[in-house]
Image 1: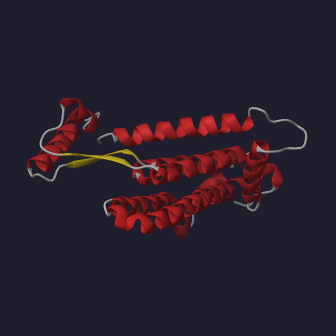
Image 2: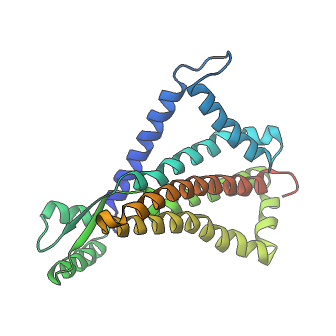
Image 3: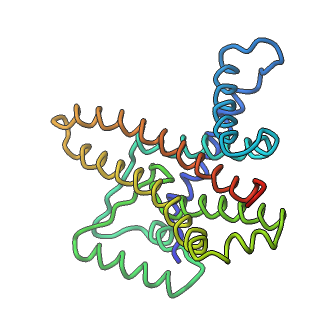
Length: 252
């Protein structure tokens, strides 16, 4: 496995942006009549709470609102970063040893050597390599699969803590549930998010190469991409609440 350093950098940048956003929006909150920034953050909070409340009773849903809010805001900002700005460098011929080391960072010497060989082959062939320094973290499958894995493992932890025997019967005593829990959910939850964001950024890159002639289509597509990014953040958060409710609710 080779680490994707640009994606790791963007993941940290997104976390910092989310922290600064929430700090700015909540630093002057009060118990009186809300206004301005407090209205916005309370609307988002109530939005997530209502989504969770559609699948769980109010007392149970309250335990997971913070998780849902974190997922929604983090994924929303992640989806938009590649829309507002795109920084990609194209390298041909030779790259510095520092850049080569960054692109081949791995805990496995064999994987590092294999990645270095691929890069050197592409450079020697004249094709060059592209490095996306600023992009949406969710355009990388490693990020979306990590997010999905965290949600699914947490949902199973809730089920096991509630009743190990009930969780075991629910997951393993029904062939459909085995397929759903071990294959369908771990694949569909991250791939839906990754596919939509990655495809959108590929098209943005294609339109940017069109120069002035593609400016109008680019403007329209970026507007649509903002909408898609928002919808995908909502879908991921809502499905996360659904999967958690399946383990947290009585009767499961």
